[in-house]
Image (cartoon, rainbow, N blue to C red; front, side, top):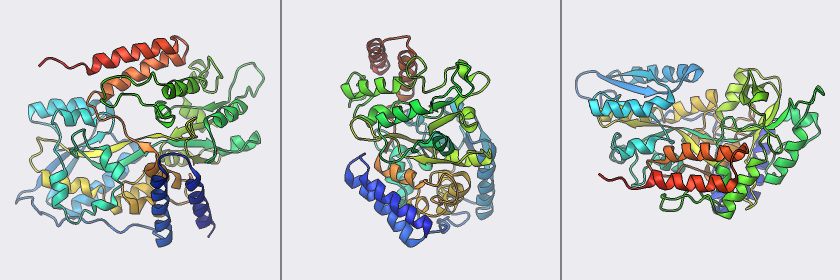
Amino acid sequence: MAAKRRAVETIRQARRMAGRAPAAVQAAVGLVAVGLALGLAMCAPGPVRAAGAGAGTGKITLVWMHWNTGKREAEYLKWVERFEKENPDIDIVPQSTPWGEISTKVLAGVLAGSAPDVISVSSTWGESLAEKDALMDLRPFIAKEKDLDIDDVFPSALRLWQDAFGRQYAFPHDLDLALLFYNRDLFDLYGLNPPDDTWTWDTMLQMGKRLLKDTNGDGVYDRFAYSSWFFDWYPYVWANGGEILTPDLRASAMGSTPARQALEWYAQFYPNRLHLMPSAAEQAGSNPDAMFTAGKIGMQPVGAWYGADLVQRQVDFEFDVAHMPLSYAKQRATLLAGQGMAITVTCKHPEAAFRFITYMASREVQAAFGALLNQTPVRKSVAISKAFVNPEVPPKNKLAFVIALEAYARGDYKTPVWSTILSSLRSTFNRYFVGTDSLDAALSKFADQVASITKPRKK
């Protein structure tokens, strides 16, 4: 009953949130309410086609290239083995490959006719592979699969892996959206109220200044307010009503007043201003993640999966998660990213490959990953079940991820050159954040770089 009361109170708070259109928020909290009413404790296994369906007479071998490692990879491999047992006509050969190398290797493999059959696709660089026609459009497979229950998949998750032409170049598997993790014990230590749905950008700065401490009196700060370890700053631009690119995706939109306000606000976290984040020297021999787990940083935006990591590391403080703060425009935003699964155009057995990737998105598998890895599920029925929203498994407020997913999380821009633009965005404005360049200089430089990147090339 206590857990239910907490969930109901969270729903009430969500209704008061300023974010996207009220209808979107109400749809999200309504979805959660339905799940709580049904009392879903664990999701039923998803549909899996009978072994051998559409696979011919011989045994099929599918190579799956992915970037998962450690505990996550071990858990994935358990479900690969289970898939093979339920589908004895298919062998899966996993290939763990660094995240940043998959795109290049896949393109080279497609040209040589030797690409892996199935690949894990990042929402950051997947668009470029789709634009080069390296991946199959999954829409025909989805249309033929009557038992897929596509309506149970979050629409935002499907859109994440659709290109600018509407082609479904990957199927959702793992969603990643960052919300504000915080060290509750640190807030309690200094008599501060922890982050909640009323927090604004100004609140975050005010509380941040009270978390900044020199605990041993040596004149050097050793406790900080904020870390951007696993969070890109540019969703703050969205939250304030700004955009990175113009609607035609060919020019910078960062010179707008909302974008400038967001940049000026975020710059205050840096050591050359309010010093709410540690400098490189203050991180010597460490990193922001290690400093957070050591109790030296109060807040950092990260995905739900981080809760499982903190539990595994047995941190000695209580932590939880809150919604992103309200901007000057009274809105929130966070980046919706994650891992999809795609079929390369050189795959000789696409029906078998589709069977594998939809198995990994089935209710049963999604429920297991939600419960064991805190992985944000792609299926609505799992996201609102106890497999994911379980107050007894920290962070307690995982319901916030479900609400944010429907209310204010959004994906990156649908252009094949986004990864190049993003690299420019980070490097150019970092020079402003650390005080090397003025804001006007950074804005001018970025505008020139975007124009160069998006300039039509002669064929």
